[in-house]
Image 1 (cartoon, rainbow, N blue to C red):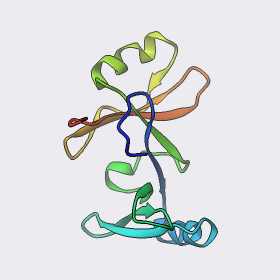
Image 2 (image 1 turned 135 degrees about the vertical axis):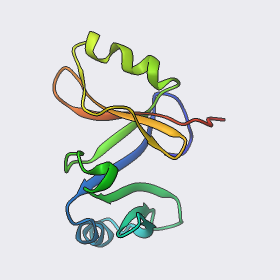
Image 3 (image 1 turned 30 degrees about the horizontal axis):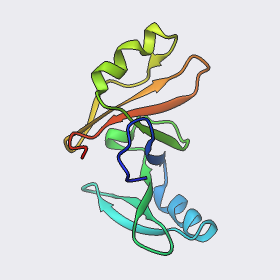
Image 4 (image 1 turned 45 degrees about the horizontal axis):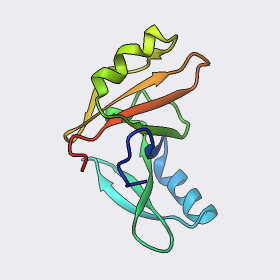
Length: 128
């Protein structure tokens, strides 16, 4: 998931009330390893593939920047220009679920398609 190709899934995230319990569930069921990511007074988790250390997903607490996210796996699709991609969302029958947000230098927004499915569009500020 780290090939940085526009229009591909760049990340997969899950935000839940008790990320520690859910992280342990996926470690046991899928075999992922967890890397703690300090969020100040709590940890979120980058989930690593079992045969290496590549991060393949995140399991996060529904707190802070993630407090308004639904408890469902959320794909982040890579776009070239987040502002260009946001513009046609409502014009095409969808809706914005969140305002534009930042993660480091990167930008993302949650959107809902015309059928009601939620995903995020994500712009990496340093795509190579």
